[in-house]
Image (cartoon, rainbow over the protein chains, first blue to last red):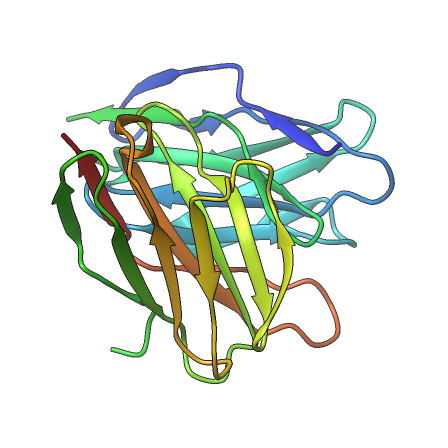
Length: 110
Length: 115
């Protein structure tokens, strides 16, 4: 079975500082990995995906993610966090369905 | 707005009642998915459709749950004889699957509270 793990329940950073949200995966075969963000009382919004190719994937709102096969990781990053980035972030792996991690709450303080 | 829409956004029902939720996917998306999300957890897959065919159902989808997508467009999810454990956010997503691996686009969800 395919799965992802998000080892941190919460991440707190100051505005302007780099933001990293961690994700590790377990799959058989090629991993198809996704990041989504969820704001309160709203559905999930797609940020980016890794299918194949370049290990650094760029997505929406200035986010990027680095795929690392040897460490089975797919960490989400943003060079300079904004207060508006405060939200719940989910990593997911896909076969025909998405299997999500438990989520990481990001709080960016002004 | 041409995103995924869900109706109702909130539903409060008494235990034992039946409820039905509707999802309208992005136009021309051929796949439609239902997920359930409880507080503090990531969404969990329930079922999905390719056009009007229901291709997979999770073991989470007990026989009290039924989903349809009669014309390959909108979908309904019905829960019969609701239980308090059914209280959750029910999310619908759609995608256009042709070649390659495509992202799923989610609706705002229907929050169900069973009292």
